[in-house]
Image (cartoon, rainbow, N blue to C red; front, top):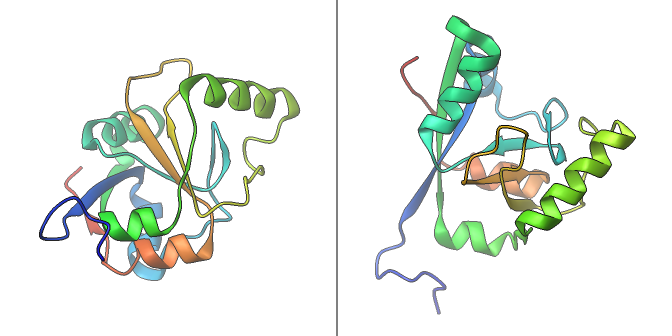
Length: 149
């Protein structure tokens, strides 16, 4: 029995802000999970809001920014058994990782971590962090799309 809430399995669109050069590498050879790091450790970060990915890439890369769009079905997302974090849990984990200096190396050992964005300029939106090769290959079933700058 399908787990989707809809009669037709919808795609969820996720956005990743990066540099033009990194976007070319992702579009050419796929996501490299060993390169990314962020407030919840090593992984590939996405958000459901294009403007958040754009703002992040604008802040970091200025005019060399690029936003990629990925599609993932709701069933595929939930079949990866994402680890959901509350806002308070995410804040505690982020603080611990910053204190330990492991924001580029820490992994939860999950496929996906689903959490509110909790950085110092936090917005009230969620992020997902892809950690496993299974989640990466599931995400890449549909080729990512490069959006306009």
